[in-house]
Amino acid sequence: MAIKRIWVVSLLVGVCSCFVMWLLSPIIYSVFQVYRFSRSAQVVLDIPKCRMKVPGSTTIQCCQCVVGFQGQQNPSGLAFAGPNLKSSYDAKNRTYIISGEGTVKGGKNTLELRDGRVFLNREEIAVRWAPIKILMTTDGDVLNEYGDWSW
Image (cartoon, rainbow, N blue to C red; front, top):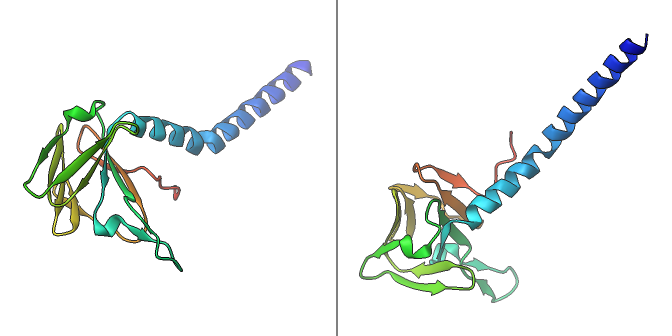
C-alpha cells in the first residue's frame, strides 16, 4: 500500500514538473534570445520607414528597426560599403546607426539599404508600422527577435 502511494506521488510530482517547465519554456526561450541578441553587433536603421509618428502629435520617434549580426561580437567586424551610406557609432549601446543607401556585411550576412527598402541576405524585409528587431544568424537565417507566440 505504501509503495503504491509513493508511486502515485512520484508520478504526480513528475507530471506537475513537466507542466511547469512547459509553462516556463517561452520565458526561458525569450531570456536566451535577449542574451543572444545583446551579444551580437547591432545596426540601427535610420530610414523613413523606420520612423514612427506619435498619433496626435508632431513627435517622430527615430530608429525603430534594429538588426543584429550573430557571431560578430565586436562591432568593428562589420564592413560598410556605399557612397551614400552614412554611419555613426554609439559606444554606449555598442550599435551603429546607419542611413542612406549601401551595404553592411558581417560574416556571411548582408544588410542592404536600397530605394528606401531593406534587404537581408538579398531578401526584402517588409517594414511597416511596427518596429522590427531581427537577428541574422551565423548560418544565414533571419530570426524575428520579438518572438512568435503562436506555437
